[in-house]
Amino acid sequence: MNRRQLCWRRVGMGSVLALLASALPVLAQAPDASVLVVRAAAIIDGTGAVRTNTDVVVRGGRIIELRTARGRADIDLGTRVLAPGLIDTHVHMGWYINEKKRLHRADDGDSEPTATLNVMGNAQRMLQAGFTTVQSVGGMEDKAVRDAINRGVIAGPRVLTSLGSLNENAGSPDSVRATVRRFHDRGADVIKIFASKSIRDGGVQTMTQEQLDAACGEAKRLGLRSIVHAHAASAAKAAVRAGCTQVDHGVLVDEEALQMMAKAGTFFEPQCELVSRNYLDHKEWFRGIGNYNDEGFEATERSLALRRDLVKKYLAVPGLKVVYGTDAVAGAHGDNARDMSCRVTQNREKAVNVITSATSMSAASLGLGSTIGKIAVGYEADLVAFDGDPRTDTSAFERVSFVMKHGVVYRYPPAIAGPSRRYPQ
Image (cartoon, rainbow, N blue to C red; front, side, top):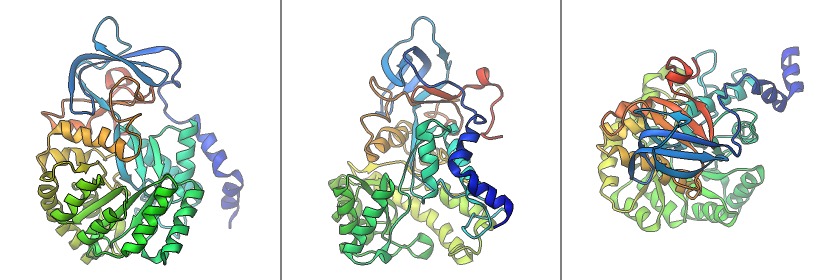
């Protein structure tokens, strides 16, 4: 260990985060008892309803009134369209591209503070893109950033994290239960479970029914949700039978699996194309790491057609709870809304329904449906405004110019804050 590394270790991550706090671009003070009126030409409220010329009245970080626009507004968004803060139920906040233009790995020489700074940067990009809540199915690197955001030390979305994951190698059902308890004791918000291989490796089921029963059963006993990586239909069905909260991906699922999810109330999180395109457009960031090779990239390319076929299946299942998750990995943070555009243009879903999926439905999947995900009285004042109407212009999803989280404004429209920009510049 050289002198610089020793110095960083002595400083400690808590001190690093505290030192950085004063440099972060928070655009408003914490909410207090004063009233703030936000006005928009149109509001898509997260339940499928649309309001026009409406004031959202905020006090103490919560919405206290919705009323017909009148008098003076503290923040007048003009012709912009307002929606609840967006939610991404599946990101990898700790993934980043290092200075060598490669996916960061534990052995690439980056220090812990460098890695943490990159996690912070990913969090801020997502907040600036309108995502006020994210669920990171990553590792222990998420914890310091999650906790610093919660304490108000740094700006970022509300973060829920698994702090790691488990798979078939966890062993016997008793060993699986013990692993779940360890994640709980570390402070995990959710249990992430790999029940199948990646789509690059064929997506076949890897965990037994008994292992899944143990994992999701123990999570439920401890008051935790469980989300399951499952491409194979058999893996998805096993997850439903085990009472797991959510099934992710499902590229190879069949109609029976989807019907089982709908009947059981299991949340389903498919992706559109962001994660696949990110890998294919930036192959050299990943090439040579694990299954990121020519064969793996070819499988990723083939998966795009499979994802399109999946859309036809899941849209045909009444009552299926489809949430919004992008699987955002290194290079995709801040572009999370691209799958919203994709779901309208490619899947032919209605923009209002996509917003509902990315707000109230996703909030319900996180166990937060009574506090976030809707523009309604009593809910957290998490608000975003699009430059344009996504009902007629799908690219508007990717043009967010106003972001409020718990009554605090982190991004103002260009007319107030200056030229439109990608964050950070």
